[in-house]
Image 1 (cartoon, rainbow, N blue to C red):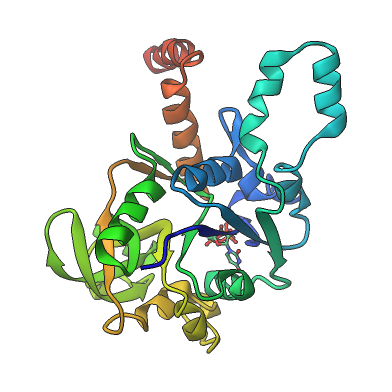
Image 2 (spheres, rainbow, N blue to C red):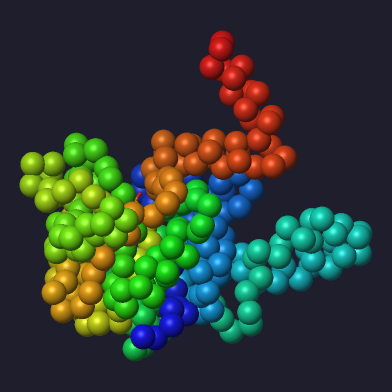
Length: 290
Ligand code: UTP
């Protein structure tokens, strides 16, 4: 079994649910407390042993790449002024030289198409996908949990969570097989089924470990739900040919591509923050009591 060393970060979407904030700023640059969403995703990947990073970007997304570059003037000024604490805050934005590449998705034809754009980076290796707008608050980082499940099964593993039946039309939904309560065998995958047609209420979140063969399936460029090339459809064609499991991860997912989910993430992460937590708890109480 090949080790998991590569991760793809699709960040070429339009972020229409977050307009006007995302008109000139990429959705993945929106901060939760003090860090942009993309930095949470890159840190999570690094913690899981990922050494090679590929961002699938589009027009107007250069800030995402610059965030992981050296800010020479800023760092020199902070050093001159002996601002060690501020300098330390930049550490999480530094990656090994040459370890981060970008590819361009010129037209946002769907998540499946974005992943196919990273085909040269993926090559013949297993790879992770992290959607930065899905943020997971957990004791063990979500991708670390998935990487462990990959080592156990040697095949495709996606992070899954229960959703309300009336919300199945928003997600990729599993048809489930053998289930030990933690790991569930995937017998089928359907993108955004209406509640009455959903084969279960177990949905895929934005964390995946996939085998490189998914790229060949995406290359068919079949249009699925919403007229887009769907990753779910490409993954579905691997079922039966390769091991495919869903992992009920430990943790709480926030859909930061959605305004309510993003606000909830701000509150949850702020309450957990060592300096801010007590202050935020106190002012939330004041608002709720008013
Ligand atoms: P979303 O479904 O959240 O789409 O994409 P979006 O365009 O970002 O946002 P809305 O729905 O218009 O508000 C899920 C992930 O897939 C990426 C997005 O950047 C996001 O990380 N994506 C989506 C692409 O990279 N390319 C695409 O063509 C579509």
